[in-house]
Length: 211
Image 1 (cartoon, rainbow, N blue to C red):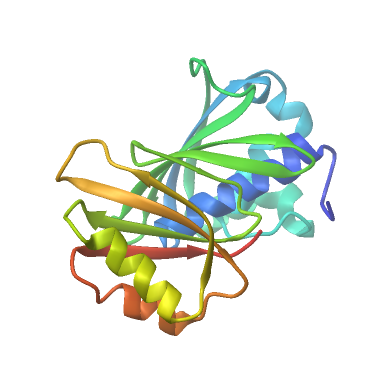
Image 2: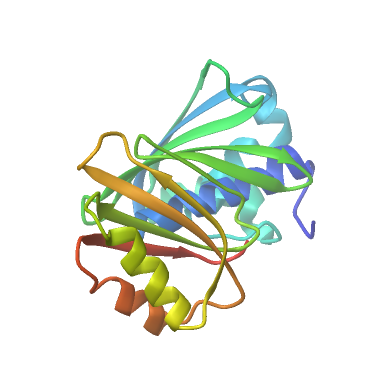
């Protein structure tokens, strides 16, 4: 990938993980608690993984020349952060768990892994299992698990001309909050997102554009 080095897995992939967490938070982060597991935990200082994650949380891309100054830039911008080493059972060796707090008090927790060549996979959002790579435009639709909600979303997308490339549902318990992960072929206009938010039982819709 076009990137600031030294490592596509430990640097470029880490930037993208941080950027996804920032997108999910939906606002400027003022606090970041980052847990690193496996190879990330063992080599993050030498490969700049800590700088890369913080850069992504601040909205930077993998080729941003400011990545190497991200820790000092974070302090200047009011972003408090901590980075700890841990063991996440059964996780990919390059796994990070990122907990963010936004300026309005919004919070999110994202877990994902850098799987090589700058590619990532996100596996958990706020305790709900997901699976997406960020290679496609991806909709995260948080909703109440009520009959007809999935059909309403997918039918509306079909009527709008959006083609679903991949779909996954995660629900910790029947009838509670659930999340649809929808990878879409092609562009996703802002109007589509706004209309989805008005459908019954929809709590929130987030678009993560292809990284």
